[in-house]
Length: 326
Image (cartoon, rainbow, N blue to C red; front, side, top):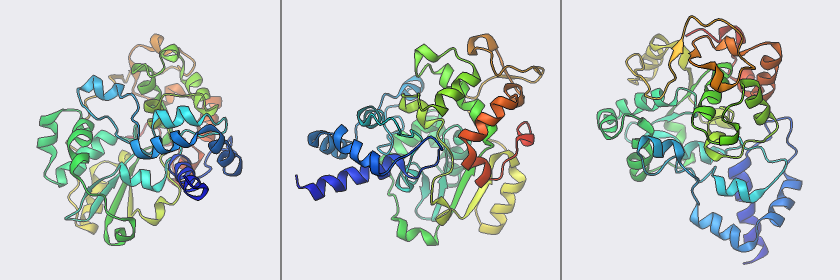
């Protein structure tokens, strides 16, 4: 294989896996490119590019679906083989964002979503507008099984240059809430069994220090914002706003989104009576999760989340004081 072709493949791998430098701990690009060339033998580069190796799909096996996330833009084998100390595991490119989207080619409407950001509700909402929700929930109450097993196999992703005429909605949630949700998801699914019984603070430290290795865990904690997304997104919708704000979008853009009658099958049972700080309590000692996300926060933990998810907090204009508002 020629040097130019090899560099093209490696460069594309960097783009798909890394995107932009969103985290202060990262120093990438020049050194990373050199490390990629050293870390990936020529044969392995070809295998990664052509085979799109899949990671273990624990969550989807639990719910009985076949294909999991089927996301060639972020998978375990790539992460394990790159072995870059400075590699930020949140990185996902614009191409990866569109790969994960749910879209209606006839109506030219697209939903962009992020794991652990009310994604099950958002996908149900989108499939309903496409007339596919009943079929999807009959296939499996866990909506992502239908998305991965059925929908993804039959869709046609529109070229980026054609999207200027599309209505593109991105659903987002409060990063302070999402951090707690990702923590619960990480521990209950035992993605890294030796760390299944850690505190919220310890979990955040693992993210901050780039210590999480499991790709499913990574998919559920990377930042919501993707560099350059604003060039494509027509409207952002904060899922905390409920149906009233969605009705405004429907009126203005002619869409028919509804979330007031949607629910997720894998949300944690929560106790509204808990009102104590548990940010340093081990997961197994928490018992029922508190309904108040603020129970996980003190000033130190709040500062840590603001460091990790600075781009989401700033770009989407979220405030900590709104963490318990629904």
